[in-house]
Amino acid sequence: MNEIHDSTGVALVTGASRGLGAVIARALAAAGWPVAVNYRSDAHGADEVVRAIGSAGGTAAAFGADVTDEAAVAALVDEVARRLGPVRVVVANATGPQPEVPVEQLTWQDHLDQLAFFVKSPTLLVRATLPGMRAAGGGRVIQIGSDMVERATPGWSAYVAAKGAQLGLTRTWARELGPSNVTVNLVAPGWIPVERHADTTEEALRGYAAQVPLGRVGRPEDVAAAVCYLASPAAAFVTGQRITVNGGHTI
Image 1 (cartoon, rainbow, N blue to C red):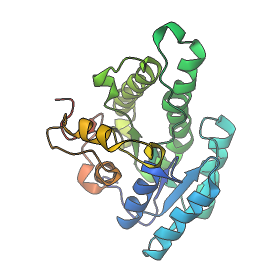
Image 2: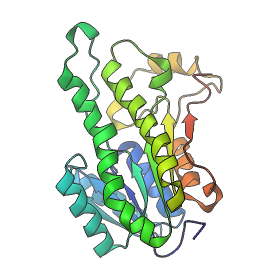
Image 3: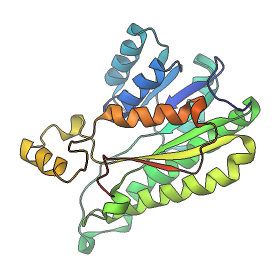
């Protein structure tokens, strides 16, 4: 099978109960994918996303799981297959706290906290879904990265290191899984304000937008559009790539 997008496939979006993940889940459903809405603790938020998708005529179900835990990821993929169908698209979006830590206070645990979401979790997700993708003739792995790898903002070294490692995984897996018709790509957003940025001042928003060639702050829908493209038949020959969605901020 050379194209992905048929009635046998499901898109699994991790960390989809709110924020960027919720918008990605709704966009994929609007594009015709049955969507597995993963959450860790926000069951209410996940149920709201599922209801919104259903109201718009789409298909979705909520699945609670810690996607940094090996047994939980295996059980999640099995449950999605049982309730919705086999996973053909994985969107590795889940994240945890992202504290700013100056290097003189940086610990190995700070690194591990970020690596758990951006290296361990994608690895577990690919391992769990790959047999089904291969059996079905192919699939898509889409990682959510960050343009912070280029921006190299002081105080964010643990986060940047983990995001850089995530990009390395994307490229290596693209070569390794290409023969199985599994594409692996990464979408790297700039600053996309969501619920957790509710306290951001208008001054900060204007200051950031002034540095962006397109003159505005990014929206979750901008990132979701890139994800939908990579999940679509139009991206069947795109793999190992990083699509930066930041209005040109890091040109």
